[in-house]
Amino acid sequence: MNKEKCVNCWRWALLASLLLAIGGWFYYHSQFGKIELRLGIYSGGSWDVPNSKEYELIDQAIKRFEKAHPNVTVSYESGISKEDYSSWLSDAIINGEQPDLFILPENDFNLLASSGALKKLDHFIARDLDVSDFYDSAYQAGTYNNIQYALPFESNPTMMCINKDLLEKEGIEVPSTGWTLAEFYHICKQVTKDTDSDGVVDQYGLAGYTWQQALAAYGIQLFDENGTQTYFNNEMVKTALSMLGRLNALNGSYRVSTEDFDKGKVAFLPMTLAQYRTYKPYPYHVAKYSSFSWTCIQMPAAFSTVNATEVSTSLYGISAKTKHDQLAWEFLSLLTNDKATQQHLFETSQGISVLKSVMENAETKEILRNDDFGSSALTVETLDSMMTGAIVPPKFKKYNTVLEKTDYLITQALEKKTVDSDLAEIQRTIEDLLK
Image 1 (cartoon, one colour):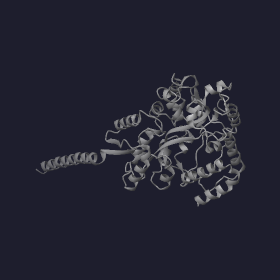
Image 2 (image 1 turned 135 degrees about the horizontal axis):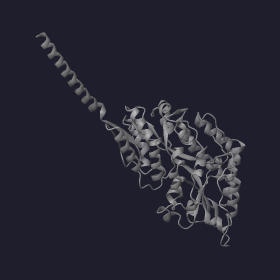
Image 3 (image 1 turned 180 degrees about the horizontal axis):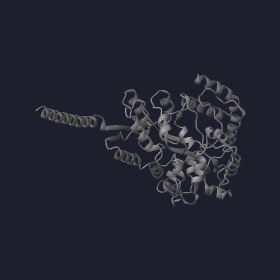
C-alpha cells in the first residue's frame, strides 16, 4: 500500500511539474514572448529630393527581422514628415513614449547625446561589430565625447556639378578629381562674360558656393571637437574667405541663383549626391536638367592634401529607456551593418551606403554604369575618394546654435566686404556664446 501511495505521489508530482512548466511557458510567451519593438522614422527620406520608395527598405528589413524573431513585432507610425519629426520625437521623449530605436532628426544628434536620451553603444559594438567596415566619416557622425551613441545609415556627400556643354562651348576640358581651387577660379573667370554683346554679363562661373565650402577647400575647422577653442581670426581663414570674395566679385553686383544654373547659364553648382542621383536619370531629369549635359566631380581643394568633401549622414540610435535593448541593437545592426540592407538602400534611395564593401562591389559599380547615368557617371573610385577623409563637423552641445550665428555674421561681413576687420569681433561674439 505504501508503495502504491508513493507511485501515486510520484505521478501527481510529475503531473504538477508538467502543468507548472506548461503554465510557465504560456505565461512567459504571453508576457515576454510577444514583444512590440517601436521604430521612429519620418517619411520622404533624409535628403529633400523626390523618393517614391520611402518605406520599401524599412518594410523589407522589418519582414526579415520578424521572420528571424517570430515573437517580435516591429511597428512604426507612418506619415510623419521630416519637418515635423523633431517635434514629434521631442514630445514622445518628454511624455516617456519614445520609440525603442529611431532615426535621429537632422541637427539634433548633439542635443540628444548630451541630454542622455540615447543609449551608449560601445559595449554592443565591441562585441558585435568591426568599425572598419564603415567609412570613418560616416561612423564618426554618431560619436559624441568619444562615445558612440548612434550608427550611420546613409551618407550624402556634396560634389561640384558641371555644365559640360558650357565648358565645351568655351573650349575648356571638364576638370577631373583632384582639381585645385586655383583651377576652379581660373575657369570661373574664363566663362563669366557677355555672350550676346549687349553689354550685360549673361554667363557665369558658379552659383551656390558657400563660405563653409570655401573653408572646407582649405581644410579649415572653426572649432575644436569640444567647442572650447575657436579659430576665426587667422590668416588661413582670411585667405579662404578672400578667395570666396574674389569668386563672387566675378559676377559684379548680380547674385547668381540656382535657377540660372537650371537655365544653362552657369558652369558650376555644388550639388549633393542625392540630387545627382535624383535628377540625372529619367523621369526627374526631363523636368530639371534636360537642356544641357552635366556631370559631377569632387569639390576643388586648395591643396592636394585636403579632401574638401562635406558629407551629411543620417543616423539611428537606441532610446536610453528601451526595455528591449538587445532586440533594438539587433534591428539597428540590420539597418546599418547588414550588407543586404545597405545594398538595397543604394538601389532604392539616393545617398551612399555607409559600408565600404557595399560601395566596392560589382553590383554597385553596375548601378553607377547604367545607361541612365551614361558615360559621365560617377565611379565607385570617385565616391570612395570623397568619403575617405571627408569632413566631420565637431560635436558639442551648442554647435548648431553657434554655427547659425556664425553663418549670419560671416555672411554680413562678406556682403559689406569687411571680413578681415570683422573676424576678431566675430570670434569674440562666438566665444561668448560658447561660455
